[in-house]
Amino acid sequence: MKYSDPKQPEQLAVKESAEEKLRKEVEDLKRQLREQKGQQQGSAHSALAKPWHPSAITIWALFLGAIVLIVVAFFAGYIPLQKRNAVIGSQALEEEHAANDTHAGVRPRGR
Image (tube, rainbow, N blue to C red):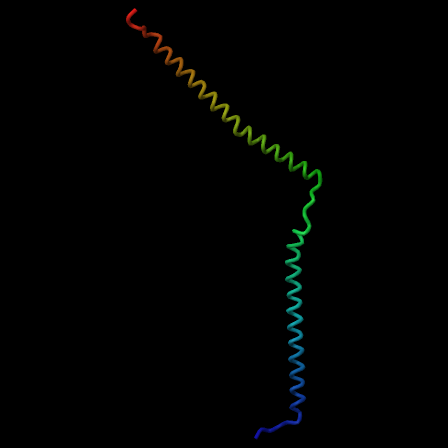
């Protein structure tokens, strides 16, 4: 037979209360962790919730920056194009003069 201790129900009650305390503590820690995760995610989403409202100076700076980039891109492509066209034009003139010089010495036969 088992030896039964009269204090055994009290020990069970103490164990259960300690176990309940631990469970409550674990639940509380889980709740705190969920709240912290929610705050972290909320901070990422709060940036989306508050749209950026730039000032007039910022808008003008962006606009002028875009205009400068367009002008620089235009001249970066236009100047080499003009140089290339000038070279091609001068080569075409040289070939035309060379062709005229070779044909100037030749006279048609028959007359």
